[in-house]
Image 1 (tube, helix red, strand yellow):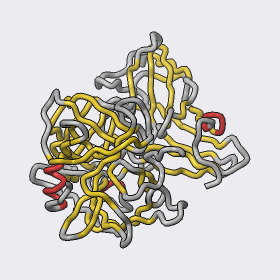
Image 2 (cartoon, chains in turn cyan, purple):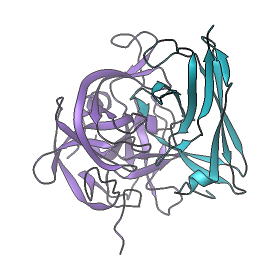
Image 3 (cartoon, rainbow over the protein chains, first blue to last red):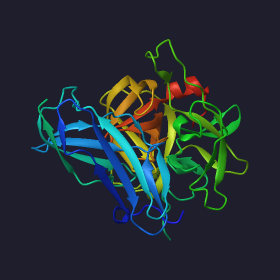
Image 4 (tube, rainbow over the protein chains, first blue to last red):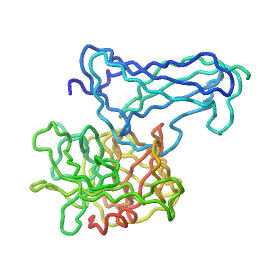
Length: 136
Length: 235
């Protein structure tokens, strides 16, 4: 392992979201996540899950959480040593059908989307990106 | 002199220590003897192939550390369908597998690493808990665990006997117990126990899952571990 995850890992990697900023109500929203090694050295991250496990959180304008992908209390808490080569980018995709955690259709309005990668310390977080849902 | 942590090489081995296989880290649950074999128990999902005997090789604390090979997985029962299992799912009663210690590896049956305090995030080993029995738990009672990521945490049991789907799979673990206590990635396999007098503890089961915010963990009761792996001598 060239580099293990440490307190400085947040400076060594970036997590970015690519998602449409404007969608019609009811449409499936493709949310692409890109984890990038920002350094010129290989990096070994300590990430949760047997496979790439990520969380997606959607909040309304007041900051209230309306959707969380990993809301189940039943995620296996195994830790994976994931090697990223220098400057390597790892992509993940989630398709959100606009249903909230309580099973309702999200109302038209302004929202934000944030992604997280759980680790054995603080999660790797993306910046929140804006999302506007228009009436059908 | 620096005190050892749960992530250091510790011999004899005890419950709560970091273990390493392939490119994964988990926690050694507890030592046990089965059919005369010195063994330890960890999660089925902490093996190369979940739900089948595959000879996974384990290291403590890391394979990169000299003399760290500690054992080979010998028992990991398969998942089943039908019966009490929800339609379309694969079920077991416990997320547990047994590993036989390699020759020459010292292990202490009945001992779990004790860190400096509960819910204080410390990974420094300050003593041991001694298992004096096995038991079941009721809602409202306090359960404890020791794991390589979040150390010793404790909290109230919130639910018992919940059929629990494992996120990201079609696996369901039947009749599991939930505890409102801290957990983190890498704590898979942690021993779960109730503290009696002094350092004497009752073994309750083996932790396998948690909530994404780290405030709740799920474990398989010890009776169900032994239902699937056979009778174990744990103290």
